[in-house]
Image (cartoon, rainbow, N blue to C red):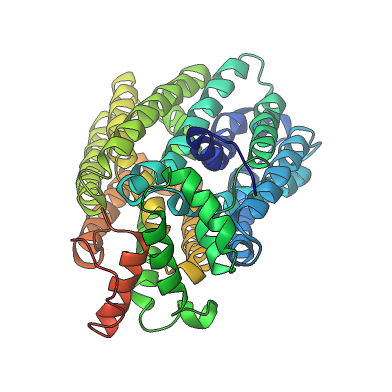
Length: 456
């Protein structure tokens, strides 16, 4: 194996799937305002069009987790890029709601695979000291993709050309496929498959020859204890990691994060803003999201994962409570519209420095190597299912209970998320993936597999 790719490009293209993830989930927020009119959607079919991508995402996450452990991270990312391109073109050319829903499901297959593969690939390529920051590139790319989608929506909003909004996802999909052709495979996956010489070449390139032998030794020691498969994922020593993954995945959604992304324009219209003003408001929120995620990439390896989750939970819950009570008092007025914009911006600030990046980073860290793809896949499937439930029910709940009650309920979920993090989540900052795995084993059998020193 001989490759000459700058490390920066490796991490950039490794994270580019996140941009497609963000664009394809975010673009529908503005496009749906015009799709609804052009394809004569009912309130039910509107919810199905928006949420159909999540059905595909659950399938993609479930399949890709196992495939990536068998075939490698790189091959499955390449396949996902092709599916992105097919889904983008098909969505843009859809003649009716049924075809659009079909291709949104196809897009979901790629979005779901990206949600498992990108954080896994980045965490396995990154050095321990910078793993949180580099793994956070996934979330940074996601929010850049969302912002790009908002901008494209605003550009095409005067003409209402939703087909261009959806079809432009082809461009980053093609770039992802082309870039991944030149990227190396994950060295940890190579070692798991017995391809030690190739793994050493990749690690020497990534680490500039520093600490490679020690890293190889740690990976090989943990590999000797593992088989890989569903039995291992459900085993007693892995179960704590599995429950943490499921809890993080569920709470990230039921705090209401994707209602902001999918239905922000609808929310702004609900409080009195017009179509263009509503879409422009989402551009502002998307910009805040990108800025705060950049800050998060600087904080996650300094402050730690758990403190950021706690800070984020408190901030999001307070923002949602203020949003709910203020709108209950103000009604559908211009003041309520601006209050909504400010509160949602504050909510996005706290989400973007905490639950947004940290959930995906921790999913890629807490599982053993032999079942990492499978474990991350399970977490992603749960995340997408929770996403589906929230996004599919949001329009009906908004109609039945109103925006105030709904956001107060999300605020209560933020309080429950805070309690979960405080009681169940352990810090992973500054520890190698192998050290995290050994600690997981030692919780069940104290003192076992302690040959590798654990940094506290």
